[in-house]
Amino acid sequence: MKNLLKILIPVVVCVIMAFKFTSIPLTIEQPQVSITKTPKVVPVKPVEVKIEVPEIKTYNHSDFLEAIGNYESGNRYHISNRFGYMGRYQFHRSTLKALGFNVTRKEFLNNPGLQEEAMDRLLTSNYRTLKKYIRKYEGEKRYGVLITKSGVLAAAHLGGAGNVSKWFRRGVNFEDGNGTKITTYMKVFNGYSLNL
Image (cartoon, rainbow, N blue to C red):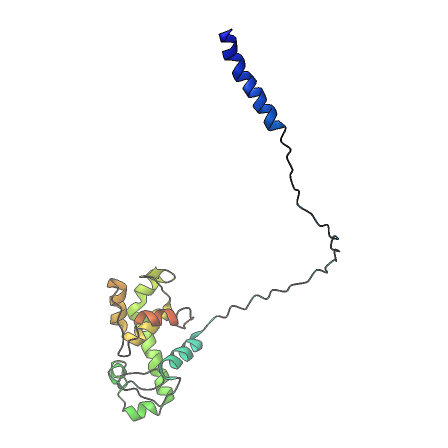
């Protein structure tokens, strides 16, 4: 009998507990939902969108001369800077002599045609000197700079063909007396189509 009581007492306790918990009344509040009217659907007329693709402008030799002249002097033929560079393209007398021009400062500043001829000779000379680099690297990046013929020749105008050659060989980035680097000219003046 003792054994029976050992078994029955826990069972009876469990039944009493189960009955006690199931008899507790539960109240669950349900949230109040407000019902609104369904909004009216209004048809929208389709809108025609026109996308205009900008015309890709190609820059030519004249545009290049205009741009570099503007950068150097504001396209003014009659000015000199504090370092002695003269005219629209800011030529130094030593550069003019190397190109075969033996003229005075006054003669050079007062002759726009002479300045244009000097620029043509300089571009031709620099192209001959730097042609192997242009052919080898044009369209590629070198030291993080996109190489184009016009960019290389603009850099040579700023710092000389020798300094541009050094840049191609060793990455030496020459800068002029104003702190302008030849790579700046390579970037600013890239993409022009030149007649050389």
